[in-house]
Image (spheres, rainbow, N blue to C red):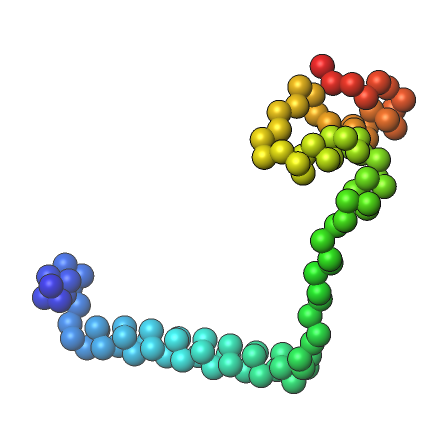
Length: 104
């Protein structure tokens, strides 16, 4: 396999060795660069306290938005399969424009 590559690319063993040495040199430079970057970031920023995710939203908070009727919300949580004829979530753009919030 190597012989076919050497013939096809018209290269010698010295050329292959130089190629691998160049690749290894670039790899070492990249590795050292990333290692230095990692060390810099650890010294510069230390161990930061990461953000914590918010708690799950409660039913009271969702209903306080008044985007869905309470009976539709209860229906969504009570049944496994729910089919709505129209979207139960109120359209905010129609409300701000003063239009009817029903769907076609």
